[in-house]
Image (cartoon, rainbow, N blue to C red; front, side):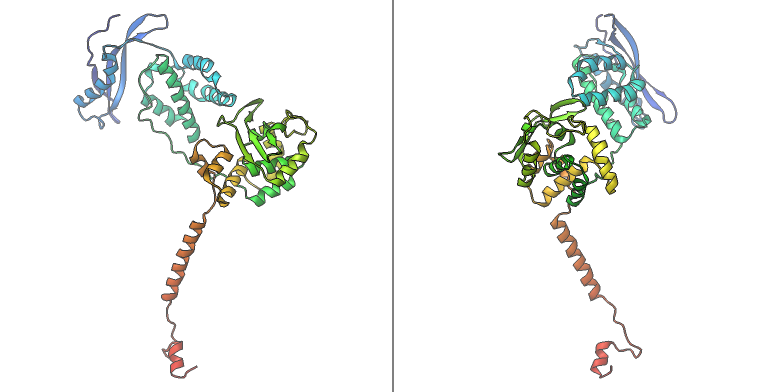
Amino acid sequence: MARRRYQHGQVFLRGKRPPVWVGRWREDVLMSDGEVRRVRKSEVLGTRKDYPTKRLALRALEDRLSPINDPTYKAMPTIAFRDFADKWQKVVLAQHDPSTQKADRSRLRVHLIPVLGDTQLKDFNVQLLQSFVARSNASPKSIRNMVALLRMMWNSAKAWGYVKHDPFDGLVLPRLEEKEQPMWTMEQVQEIIDAAEKPFDLCFWLMWETGIRRGEVCALDVRHVRLDDAAIVIRFSRSGSTIKPTKSRKPRVFSLSPQLIAALRAHVQGRGPDEPLFLSGEGKRLHPDNFAKRVLKPIVDKLGLEGGFHAMRHGNATTLDGLNTPFKVRQARLGHVDPNTTLQYTHLISEDDRRVSAQLGDLMTSRKKQSAPVILDPIGLNKEERQVVGLP
């Protein structure tokens, strides 16, 4: 079908509270059977407050029609979000890590497809997405994760020729209020180690000293401990039943204390290099979820502590900061790609901060001493004046 003449479209007011400008035009759409059909389209451009006059509303519509009026414009294929999501999961999501696949499939199945499934991709706009955000009863963090997933899917939709526009421009997301992450002190970790059975006490010791993740400790083999070099190599992480490379995709190598090396030497004596470093009570490789629920949680509950393995990592980061460990060393040991993440793991009040608060306290107390009221005795003389005149 030949492209028709340049379109100006139409605009009109609709509604009263508040009145909104609606744009209307015609657009060629490539159907699933390969036929190009011309359909009538309409879209809310904004409120009357946004565009006080019809001329301004027409200008907004002109921007919306610019891709259609472009000489190179071609009818784009149409597809419902439900069908696109099914195709995207098979082709793109299948290439991601198993843990990512599980979380994204759940977001699509529970939240996105039930609401947006029947909507054509070409009809996605910021108003539609803003309504989805406003009506969702999920937490702010979950909503942000869903929008991030939609953005990732939209990149594929653009690359596959389904869409050209950006429906996320101007989208307002709920404020994310981060909760304070629990942090265990060295003394609290020592209590956990003392309360743990063997070999979990050694496992907790290793995790606290190195700051490694629970999935990483579950993926350790005997060969990853270099006894002669007093070092450990972190290459893999376990998620569910899958062992995969770590988040940074690079091995991390750092030293261990002589005391920990001595304990590990006794632990691995007579064992093969490919055996798991730590085993469960059933003699199998540790599972991250079971390790947290069946081993750590009962100890934490007994001691009356809050948090989990992440509190141990935060404690490690805070202790390293208190030891004036170079930032690059802290970042490497924790395995953070983004240095800002490492900063969020530090809960220590710096010595500079303590010194400033002490100085402020000195200023306040000295000011109070200077301005202390003089208490007079019954005859109107203070203590010094009474001494001058010889009174007791």
